[in-house]
Amino acid sequence: MKKPTLSPKVYCSLFGHDYEVTKKVTEHVKEYTCTRCKKQLTTNSNGELTELTPKFREINLILERIHNSRKERLKGKAVISSIC
Image 1 (cartoon, rainbow, N blue to C red):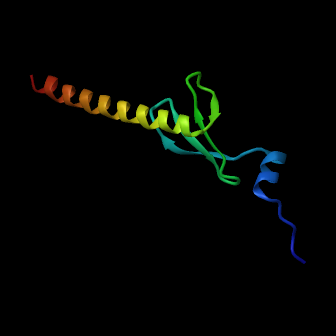
Image 2 (cartoon, one colour):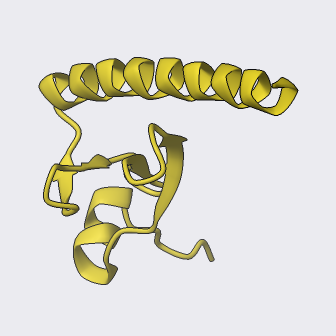
Image 3 (cartoon, one colour):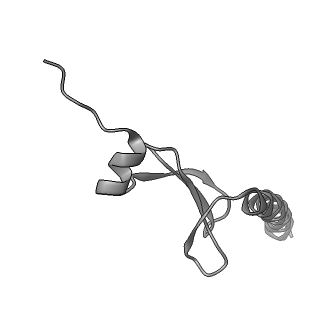
């Protein structure tokens, strides 16, 4: 006899989501996805989890670009200061 299975959305509504980090935008901002129902969340400006809308996705892309360019610029300064 086959055991009945719950759809992922029903399972998550009963037992809660099982989020995992899918993208690290900065040290403080991350994107999460539920492993069961695939719901996506991100960290907002207050540090709370918010649904990952197209607007937040765009904000995260810009934030990631700024963060990465700043890291590269600081890495270059560290190399120059260690040489001097």
